[in-house]
Length: 163
Image (tube, rainbow, N blue to C red; front, side):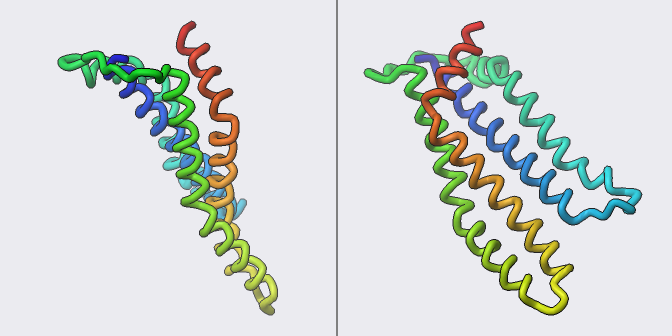
């Protein structure tokens, strides 16, 4: 298997990670901006940039991987592993990373959300907790969405890559 193919797998992992982070940031921003804020569109500049970066790196992945490895794109012998196996491992790894890194903060912010909800005037603190909770929950859900059907995602990606 060429080094450029392995580099492509890593680039696509980062693209998925940036995509999830962009969605998380966009949802989090939407929980704390007010409708009357005239600069509210500028709050979405960073998530939009992250989304464009994720999509651009996904589609530019093959070109980037060839450019990165152009001087030393040798073939690595990995016996018994196919490209589908590598993509499956990558999706499981990324999903597991998302799940493990967000399950603790999700539980913490769910607890905080309900604890603050019992206070006499919880509005500002609840808005903050919804902001933090939504980011953790989106990452948690994305982790399960990537990890559980990893083989299906790998096959779909290989079909798209062969076209």
